[in-house]
Amino acid sequence: MSSTSSAKRAVCHIVAMPYPGRGHINPLMNLSNELASKSDNILITFVVTEEWLSFIGSERKAGKIRFRCIPNVVPSELVRASDMIGFLEAVWTKMEAPFEQLLDELELPPTLIIADTHLFWAVSVGNRRNIPVASFWPMSTTMFSVFHHFHLFQEKGHFPVDLLDNENEQVEYIPGVSSTRLLDLPGFNGGIYPLILTQILGCVSWAGKANYLLLPSIYALESQTIDALKAELSLSIYTVGPSIPYLDLSHGDKGDCLQWLDRQPSNSVLYVSMGSFLSVSNVQMEEITAGLQDSGVRFLLVAREGSWKLKHGYGGEGLVVPWCDQLRVLCHPSIGGFWSHCGWNSVKEGIFAGTPFLTFPLFADQNLNSKLIVEDWKIGWRIKKHQFTTRGEISSLVKKLMDLESDDEVKQMRARGKELQKECLQAIERHGSSESTINSFIHSILQFNDH
Ligand SMILES: O=c1ccn([C@@H]2O[C@H](COP(=O)(O)OP(=O)(O)O[C@H]3O[C@H](CO)[C@@H](O)[C@H](O)[C@H]3O)[C@@H](O)[C@H]2O)c(=O)[nH]1
Image (cartoon, rainbow, N blue to C red; front, top):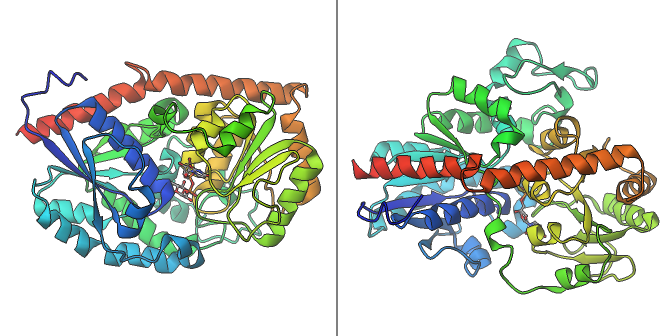
């Protein structure tokens, strides 16, 4: 979209409101950067809590994005994982009022709200104020579709269900979604999801009252699911992904991680990450680090303090760091595999980098993402098959994945990873599926703005 062709239009002022979490803020910021860089007529006010502003305030962003913050009305990010239910309750009940107050105080009235689907109240704020709302769903479209069709589980006698008796039961009736084990669906496999399921289903249903649904996916990855949803929902759906920071790949200093990777042979390092805020138990972490060491494979492990015994900068075959620039790391030629907890952003980043996966899902949508990786796209293996994974299982799978001379199964998996990478790159090229979709979304909101 040319910026000059739209130069005489009124400014479209987007207020972007992410859910307060890394896996949600990152993709909405990445999308905001793309929107702002594509049209001179777009100004974006990106709203976060004071605490999140202190984390991301200095990160690179397009010139036409500015931060505004609301007070810290939700528990701190530093303790979020210890009480997810309390955190979610605060997100659902305490953020709306300060958000409305912020809208009242803006010098330029908003012409569009883009809000994370989990902030269901933002749709009603927009509807009350006559401001169009784009609901931003930060996970896979498959996950959205599962929630959207949740009533089918009840109708088919699959919910509620005792998973012990139905371990291998498959679900084949979600439109556009391939056959899926009940075990891989959130809400079915324990954890906190059953407790918050009703509320999440409510959020998904509120999205239907927005003007737009934005999916940070890539059409080629979930085409049947996306087509099926488009056929059912009346709101405008835009597949705008991957919404990862590929525009930033050449920016910033090379930190310790990248310099260490420069010294490793090509395709030799396994990158291991469990996401941005959850940790595994100490016992499991000990088993993971022992398995990695036993494998003899080079690894780069992201682990926060306390839950692991290796020291920062461990040396030998491994490097342990508390945080890294993940997409740049994944795209480094020394990386040959990705052990991932399967957060949706990590999944897309791994695909963008063309790395094969070892999947280690922890909660929420992650089992379903692992299923997409292993069964649908066939670009990885499940490393976590039961509640606890032993060092022996870890070491042998890691060795097998990282052996470049290994059997045809691994070679084929690597080749499929490269094919998906190509599809992902094509989507973001000029006239690619995502690039064109973002352009039509911009066209639509600018037109709306002019009327
Ligand atoms: O050392 C690190 C580790 C992570 N990241 C980034 O942090 C983000 C993490 O996002 P994601 O991979 O999606 O993981 P979570 O933070 O765990 O994401 C939450 O949000 C996602 C989107 O809703 C869900 O899919 C996940 O299940 C949920 O845990 C990604 O952009 C990573 O690049 C880094 O930059 N450096």
